[in-house]
Image (cartoon, rainbow, N blue to C red; front, side):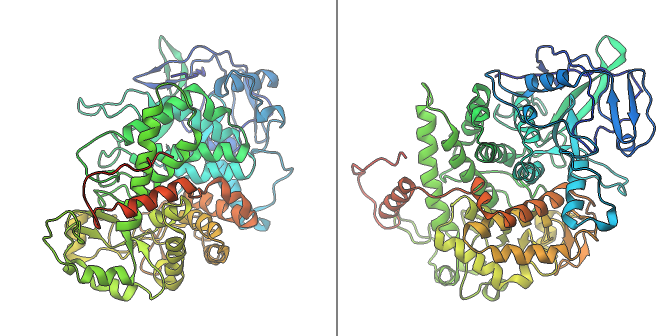
Length: 615
């Protein structure tokens, strides 16, 4: 797989150990001389001769800084080199060698803590919430080899324990990347896509076991380490975490799916298809698909995953076939089908992709959907049916229907349940999975409207004082103790157990705009604006009505900031939502109709000659 790499050398101890700037570039940047890439056990290594690494937050705020080759003037870090050279170096690092025109050709290097120079910054007292959010988002940017490469998870100055919140998470960067795309600032997204692609092929081992090559990291961090053979100099490396250091040691199933979704959004938004057409990018897409489409023991087309393998990354009883993973899986398959270039040897993969799309589409729509009619059907289920035409295929016991569900389900509306396994239906409402089923067209048009109907009807439960509940309802009492293991972070109505997450605003906005109902998102954004800035952009909120800032929530959480910005940008320009949505094509609809007519629940017999479902 093609890759590019660079090394920055810095006099040891001359810089702070914090590696984030409030701006992407400065007036002058140092000369870079590039060496070949190497990806080894230490991560992606930057091997350019360079005069500085990254400047600390304190330096960016205007504190004093001294170096033999660099100086600080006001808030700008100035190096004695030629601007033209660094532009060419950055292009050679992250762009294909086929003459693709960079945004840098059209845009001057930004100064004074922003991607683009807007003149003097307003005073804090006169800034709008949106202006404040942009300032905070740009302050969270991480640099590698002088180029913006992502945003840290949180930049909370009040936190005494950093943990891994100073890393760039794949899933957390998605709303940040979309915000930059909608703002016309493309470089950081392109860099993120290409550098995380390099990490995909990095060696990953835990307790002598190595997962599939297509696995994307959960997060990565830019580290400055002593240069091999020269302790007086340092170099930058990208240090990824594939789950081997994460709490619970769970591999991030959703990272590769989000990466494909962002790659497609980048091409749609910029019109630049050369990135997705690169050989190494095409190979990366195929590696993710092969990992997801690999044969196994499962009888279902849904992905079988462990607990904690997605946004809900702690034990919450979602192991099996959680809706969030299935919605992202379906969306990634649709996006990949659109981006894959036909070539010799890929016919089998494309055929498997298309067949899985149809089967997954049918399975989720048919078996995950829940409304009053379906609840009544389950209530009257016969059990222990042994036959090919059984109505109760998964042997669901009617007593599983929870008491809260009867009151929660409105007369008009419905949703996709959280999980489905033999003798088990998870009736909880999971927001991200339902919203992304709308965005990706995994849900039918009628189902999509019904989901939004339910959100409107149950606004007090799902939104209340701050959007948006990650799931409903919370587990309490003995159920909480057994399923979470008495997790002190996932107590009832907190964190993943019924907490409210402002970042979900952007998914709600995309879904609402797609269905022609933007007023739902507008109402939620207006509600969030009343307090999210005053509360310092928390990670999540606690209690049934989301009245308290989460007891362990980080402040200045980047995806809370970015989620708000994406919602505002999309409401101002609803047409831009098309960069993120997918429409169901006629071939899939026809294939789905064939699946319905051939459903073994109704008929079973010798296989008849049919039109193939290849689309």
